[in-house]
Length: 224
Length: 224
DNA sequence: ACACTGCACATTGTATACAACCTGCAATAA
DNA sequence: TTATTGCAGGTTGTATACAATGTGCAGTGT
Image (cartoon, rainbow over all chains, first blue to last red; front, top):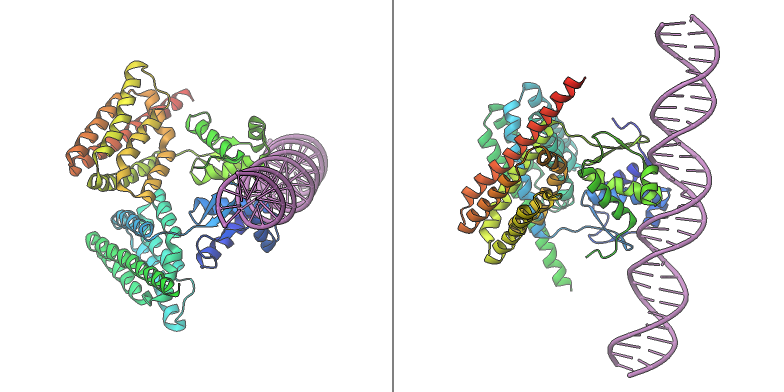
């Protein structure tokens, strides 16, 4: 799949990681010239990369004024997480209907690999990738590609904030326990309980993020 | 808002209409050079327009092979409409919580304008735009912009098929009656009934489309 | 006949060059 | 002083030119 990568795709992938990694503050302008020099390409693939990122909601274009990284308000974050609850409980139910042993094992293996990394190293830079990989594996049996694409889209949009939360609070272990719980309920075929757990799992993550944001806002106020 | 339109945006808007209008069969290649000549621009804005349309799901890029219009399978169409039910009933409930008289009047005025056009002229080319405008007006009071954006996205993706259905069957009047029903339930504040009606409204549209597609497939078989 | 290689052509992807537009500052006038 | 106009510089948007890749056919060999 997609064995060849155009420069535009390469720039888009790398820049996405940089944005999600928090390298830019919300609202900073991304100058095409500077990025072109960074990547040693012309501005054309840079523009195309920025357009791609715009469609993912990471960047906003203003005609003749350029591209700016987006910043989400608390209310938008709440909305995104509410959508995640809606879509992910929906897909989880379907997944549980179709679940095979192999599916469960696959999801579990991701979880185990992650557990090990957690116990040995402690810090995990790309937690959010593992996180999404697990959810994806759990939802895959539903065989709803369009739904999955929307979920993925919502995740990308909120990813920056999830990372931020993990940086400030130490909720990874808790989330990990909930992941095991999800897997257990799925194995038992108990869709109701699984969905209930998933719902609180997502909602609590949301509240965590909102708390961090509001603390930060308070700190900003005092500084000024 | 967006007073200036770049050439890329112009091409994207026009090309979107052409694709949704059914000018291209699913899977046809869109040659950049030809489009550039059509619009009397260079290939650069054409490429950017195609990228935009790709993010909307109307077109697919294959590296070094170009852009092709997408074609949805019956199962994907079903999935999209299922998502619409999920998201639109969700937003409708919220909208009904916040509804004011002014909101209802606004939605109704769209409906009335449309009724008139229907009675006088008969044929309406851009029914799907009116259709979406009404739904949008009804959902707006929910004040959930991200949700609304997703709904809009799903609508764009399925729009071609909705138009196709309307071309072959004459369901516009029925849909129009249902719209009035929706408005009535909303006015009464009866979210449950409104959502139930909305659900069947969407599901029946879906079944209509699937029926048309399967008939067409059968016709194709006989031809061969 | 069939498979395979390699070349020519067409099309896409990207670099460079230029035009259009926005922004901020300086100069002018009220 | 304050508001306004116009210019200069810089950035984005687009055209043109070139490079890289995919495709199809001719030619060769088996």
